[in-house]
Image 1 (cartoon, rainbow, N blue to C red):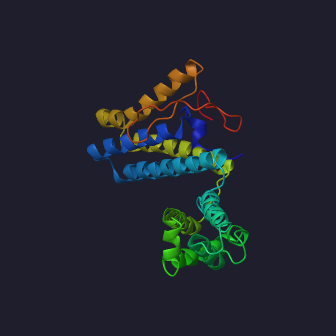
Image 2: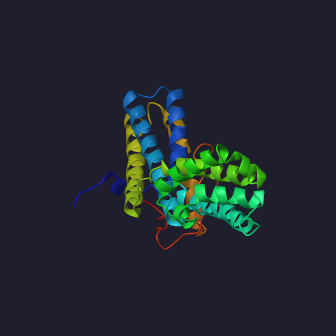
Image 3: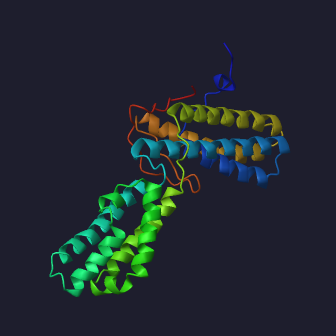
Length: 269
């Protein structure tokens, strides 16, 4: 069995945001007291682990609570785009019921023959990339050679909406899916953060010996001691330990503990 540094510390596990805030404050204290380079590097490394853990937690939470955002929000915009295209088709269908000699009927027929030669279904059911290019072409023709007919039927607003949605559609299609994060990755990063905190403490006692630099050691460790005490206070009352804003330390509303997330231990591992 391999021993780890965490076995020799009674450091309470804390939300990653509390670790990140404590470490950022320790880094500032280290700069004020001009701590030795190895200790400063150890703190900086722990800060990077904390930031990475926060990013993983955010990715995990988004994946757990939201639908896939592969290709951005293209699927949602596609629904709105289909509705906008269908709205134009319905207006044209209504105008086509008029007298054949009517300018409105003739205009509707001309537009329909150009943009819906295969019917509206051929447009709205096309694959995303093909649909985007197709609609881009249709909009150019509606604004160009068919501009008079569009104006006669009062379709300008509808054409502009289709164009706006299609531009957004194209931008979303260019987005790629964020790498998927497993909960095992999150817990592994949290474990690494706990180890990094223990290593910072060990380095602090190595480079700021209590009998030589009491003020420096106290100033460096006080942010961590404060967050440890706050964590202890919540746990002793059997309450969930709320996360904090890692930049300011302000407490955030406590999230309900789910079955997929382990509760914080009272101390250590």
